[in-house]
Amino acid sequence: MNTSRALVRRPWRSAAEASALLVAAVVAFPLYWMVLSAFRPAGEIESSEPRPWTLAPTLESFRRVFGQQEFGRYFLNSLLVAGTVVIASALIAFLAATAVTRFRFRFRTTLLIMFLVAQMVPVEALTIPLFFLMRDAGQLNTLGSLILPHIAFSLPFAIWMLRGFVKAVPEALEEAAYIDGASRTRFMWRILFPLVLPGLVATSVFSFISAWNDFLFAKSFIISDTSQSTLPMALLVFYKPDDPDWGGVMAASTVMTIPVLIFFVLVQRRLVSGLGGAVKD
View (cartoon, one colour):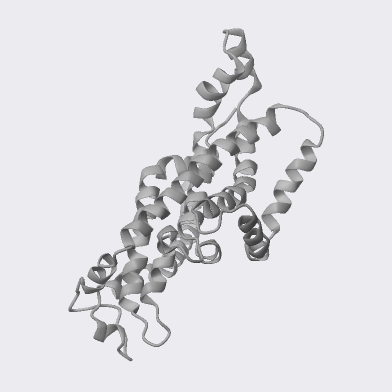
């Protein structure tokens, strides 16, 4: 009986695996084409008959990218912005999620609904008001004009996601900690924080990608001081309307992708458990 069921389910499983491989191939193809174009010579990139391979790989595009005097500064600026956003949003979201889950206060439900509504507002609709806000605060042409908006936009999603993780921690565990003499602060950082860490990692990945790949805020708020620009702005150096350097654009995009891949490799185990909900009663 079990054998017959396995035979019946096997075609469906094979179809599901084939569909997953097809989706993965479709998603990965643009990345493959980006890396391939970064190693192609200029003649192949501009050819009217592109091929999905190259017989003469070259590092010339990467030499032009790293030859830019400001490229290293752009990289450090992006790293500083993304790192600050990840750390600040994770800590604030953890404290906020703990507050709205463990404590009862007036307008708690209203606050949660506001977090949800904030996720529905498109970023583009708020760019102009944020520009005037940053101008009045004297933050234009500074990295603060990139850090603050990204923290604000990443918090609603992070709080909603962490709320489920905090709620999944049994209250009996908290009571047992208090009986053993642990203070509320010690319980939060020594017991609760490690239990919700997978959720923090999952939210941090989204915060990191959003801040690392940001072009809209960088283009809108960094107007004249190019020393405060980030890596997405470096792409404009190679993109010229009359004569775009597609090899340089693809090489710079490939370099931008490497830190994201490294970040994923470092947190992949906790990311999987975080997205699946590792905390259970």
